[in-house]
Amino acid sequence: MTQETNLNTLKARFRGYFPVVIDVETAGFNAKTDALLEICAVTLKMDEEGWISPDKTLHFHVMPFEGANLVKEALEFNGIKDPFSPLRGAVSEEHALKEIFKLIRKEQKAQGCQRSIMVAHNANFDHSFVMEAADRASLKRNPFHPFATFDTAALSGLALGQTVLAKACKTAGIAFDNREAHSALYDTERTAELFCEIVNKWKKLGGWPVISPEEESEQSSD
Image (cartoon, rainbow, N blue to C red):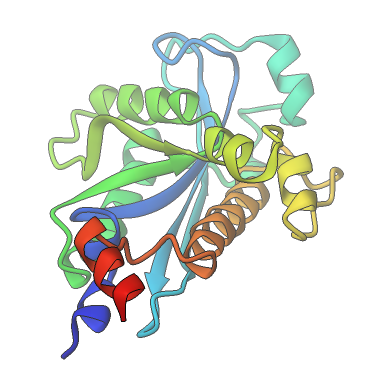
């Protein structure tokens, strides 16, 4: 197996981290007090040539935790008119996160990664809500790094000159329907496509695998 092939794994590409794309819909901005209402996770895979793409998807509507704050403006923004409606088919935070974490740990192990890292658009927001919900549910086996993330808003600003998800997707040639936006499932799938496009574009431009100064000097002298 060549060095090039060795580098074409998620483990090698992201320093032992397994990237998982997450999006949440909430009833406010405060992760400690406001309800988590929807969550989606998309895992990623890499082929033998080093190109990454979305893999598995897991999505849940979530019931507000007991005593959760529901901000009217937030509900109007995401279109969740009645968080308690049985038509949502919502589950508890504990159930949703247990199932998502179980999938992530399985895929993480299969990829030989040591830990998972959250990929999200304006990632601090999603990361804070997932971590608070995991704490409320007393989940001990949280696969995510406690603070590190890959923020596609920042990456898009660098690679595409755009930081808004819809505009970044359109600039990258990814179809984006604003009527579908602010659904955790839709936004996670688009964010996953966007992250993969940026990572793959960097590879196409010659940025990966990284060539050391010594190797670069040897190539230029050939």
